[in-house]
Length: 328
Image 1 (cartoon, rainbow, N blue to C red):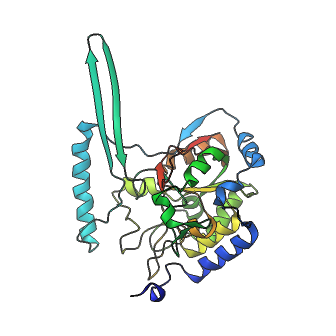
Image 2 (cartoon, rainbow, N blue to C red; image 1 turned 180 degrees about the vertical axis):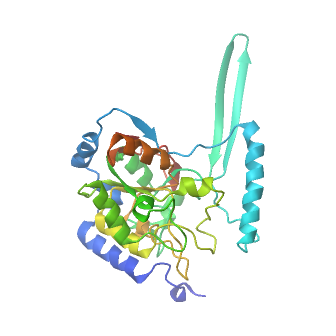
């Protein structure tokens, strides 16, 4: 199939959102840095103003590298493989957040030193990570527009984001509470109406550049023995669909932190929210551990805090592992 006849990877509504974004935000000769550019001094001050108790909570899932725990991890992987086979898949899709850690220890008399070399998959459905602009593209470009081939040589948006500083007010949207359920199901993707209801429950007026923290109950879902499928798998999964993606784009968030990803409930298997990386330069932090934060904020009687998501400044990076902090 020739390139001209290849199917469009993006739905028409995604391209419509991209055109509107270009008209409103793009300047001649200036490379757009996407949603992070909306995080300005006012957004940071809004976030700082929400810190009342001086407490902090990490939104990162732990990365297991301890040798004695890896055997258990391998056994869990076999269980996961069996579940994939029940879904009709002979193999698990790639991109599952693999991490390889080589620890080097030297003991010299009474002195000791340590070092390590780490190799990791910056995407997938396991480790908490920040997707860069060079993660989802179309028409041989990333958002910006930036030529996709530039990632092989000198693409620098992750460096720019790191230097800009991703710190802003975070607003927690608790979808399971709105539904009266423990978690979102694959049969019912999160809708715009539910996001509106969750936002109304916070009593907060969302402003451009704020961070949306969207809790969907993944911690309870997995604790019950369920496996969250990769977006590369041709199966439905819980998450946010087209309706919710349009809602997110309309709110102009500085970034989105979530536990479940795109619902992947369309015949084409489109990843609606991830498509916004190309359309509006959306900064996404995938696989956040949000259950403890929900409980902590509920105890504190608030839905807001200061989000700090500081990625390493790695040239040409398509994504990085990250430890987002919520201060409240």
